[in-house]
Length: 205
Image (cartoon, rainbow, N blue to C red; front, side):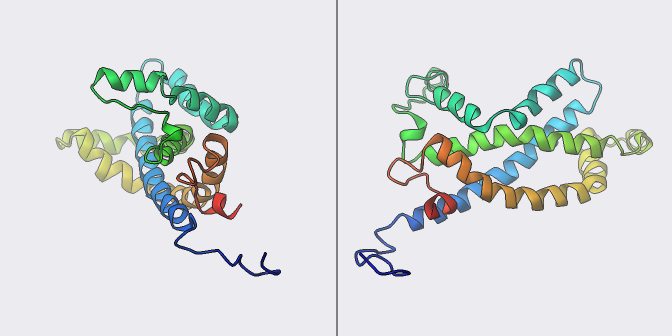
């Protein structure tokens, strides 16, 4: 045993899972943040219009954020089991996954990413909907008269006018993503299998 403040004599960075944890943290952040923001913007754009049942869908998409994180992870662990619904659906399209996502070295971290995106997209959707509702309708009417399509209006009018909100939420989300990764890992995989889904904070823990 090493003394206080000393590493064990058999410790080696190449033998430890530190590199995997750091790589997973980068993968998790680079995948979760842009996908979540893109999904939130897309949902906000659709539901901000006069869509039938929009209030119901807003509540549905926002609910995962206020639900218990542990309960969410338990439900998703069931869905991602070897014989779970998701693997069965994928098999219909010729995609064969022969083990649980959370017990696969290749899929465990991506299972965590999927659940994280699913949980957080609704929260940011609500924030972007609030910003979009403040954009003057006259700007869209003028764009329609000029022949601008919806995609052009989205990138030329909507995004610039809500960019301050996007930039602010993006900053906070990057910070919270690194912190929340620990909770998702502990609730879904405990870092397994053999440290394959550890992130920096769970490795430190």
